[in-house]
Image (cartoon, rainbow, N blue to C red; front, side, top):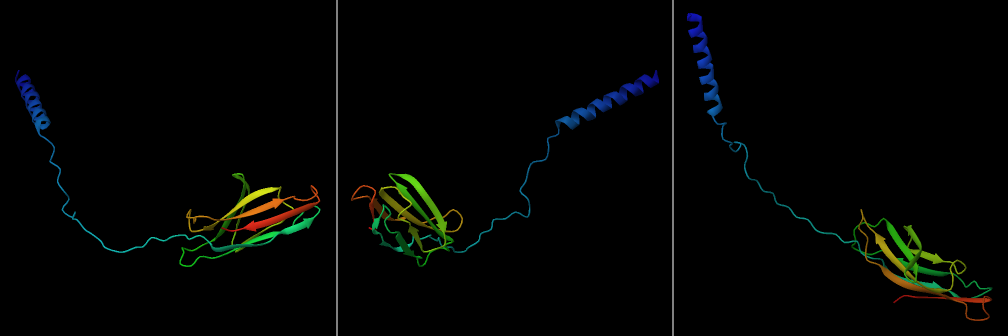
Length: 160
C-alpha cells in the first residue's frame, strides 16, 4: 500500500512540475547589445552616354544602270561622355528596320546598289557601358530612279 502512495506522490509531483513548466512564458526579446546606428558620407556623380556629334554625309549622285554611287555618313566621338564601346547605326524604311550595324568606326558607307528605291532614315547612337545607350542622331538617305526607269539611279543624303 505504501508503494501506491509513493507512486501517487510521484505522479502528482510530475503533474505539478509539468503544469508549472507550461505556464512559464518565454523570455522577452531584447535588442542586441552590439547594435547601434551608424552613418556614412560620400559623393558620387551620374554619368551620361552622349550621342555622336557632327553627323555629316557625302557622296551619292547619279549612276548608270540603276546603281548610284555610295553615300558615306560620318560622325565624331562625343566629348565628356561615359566610355563608349562603339556605335549602333540603324537604317529604316517607312519605320521598318532594314539593317543594323554595330562597330567602333566613326562612319558607315551605304553602297548605292544595295537598297531599293525609297527614303531611308539612318539613326546612330553611342553604345555606352552596360545597357546605357545615347539618344540618336539622324540623317536621311534617298535613292531614286528618276530617268529611263532602271537605267539611271540617283542617291542623295542629308543631315538636319
